[in-house]
Amino acid sequence: MNLFSLEPGILLPAFAAGLLVLASHVPLGQAVLKRGIVFLDLAIAQIAGLGVVIAHSLGGESSPWLTQAGAVTAALLGALFLHRMEKLALGHANSRQEAIIGVTFVAAACLALILMSHDPHGAEHLQELLVGQILWTTWSGLVPLAVVTALVLVAWFGLNWRDSSLGFYVLFAVTITASVQVVGIYLVFASLIVPALVSGERLTRGLVIGATGYALGLVASGLFDLPSGAAIVLALVLIAALAALFNPNRPLAGAAPEAHL
Image (cartoon, rainbow, N blue to C red):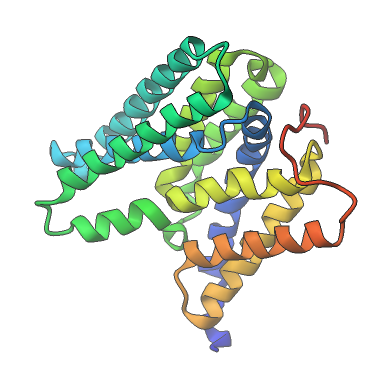
């Protein structure tokens, strides 16, 4: 344990990044549970990551704009594809849509692995894609994420895009694209599902659970020199489990109604 490793200049921007991610991911996660398509975020996050890999393979590693364009384009195309599949799956069980989402995730992951197989830094890129680089976050680097988060929340709550199936998928793609490059695929999934799973329709409760998990995970990663993404995921699960245990009369959210503060 090293108390001197708790450097505010590193941990505070990382925590701020986590709060921005949670601001959009908790309401989106509640909608995902309501729709019964839990693994949509994994698929879209993996597709966005595939877009980053494709951009890098085309020489975009030194061009942030090309990388962003690749990630956004891939995520939007993936979201539109899954939205179309949802339309075609109407009248069938949700498990059919979940199966399509699962196949899409596996296909995108395998294609990314193939593209990275001849990259000498492929293992490093894969780790960054999965667990993110939240500790490398800077205050100036938070500006794009903050702008995307603000626009998504305005569209979600102000313009009621959450009531539109297509609007939901588009916002989902944009949100995941912005967050997956900061926190990684694992933490995107945990931020969407874990707080929503135990908060039901109570948005504030979900945000508090998520913020507590991020804070605990970041502190643990600093004290014990742990991978920050993995530490935060486990902290989120721990806090959510404790919240569920101390509120035993409230079932885990499976089909949460619309989010309320």
